[in-house]
Amino acid sequence: MSVDVTEPRPEHEAGWRVLWNQYCDGAIEPHVSDATWARLLDPVSAIAGLVAVSAGEVVGFTNYVVHEGTWETKPVCYVEDVFVSKLQRGRGSLVARAMAAQLVQRVYSGEWSRLWGITAANNVVAQRLYSGFAQGQPYIRYVMRGDE
Image (tube, rainbow, N blue to C red; front, side, top):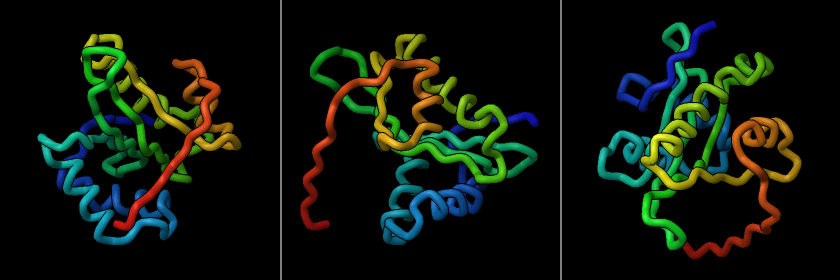
């Protein structure tokens, strides 16, 4: 199986939405999904992404946020979402690794100073992927939400 990793384009929307809806599992309101897709296509948005395509079908995506940091002068990339089609899992993480490799390369090229993300403590699949290029950190995440 070959996988092409590229920036999302309008023709990827239907495939991205199928996977996005599986990933979110009803936790995201439709208007937020619409806004997320629009931001992914907007070249001035801090939100960007990648889609993995195999045989013309979107089989994975990653959404990330590029932001400034206080500990370095180059932009920092926060990987917010990574999802691979359930039909493509268990193949040595080929799809997820292909997407991660593109992000890691942007750090090695000097475009970004740092690449970071978080995952659930019990998500050993994601941890195995991330441990392939980074070291885990012993932090606790705190979240406060206002009305949206």
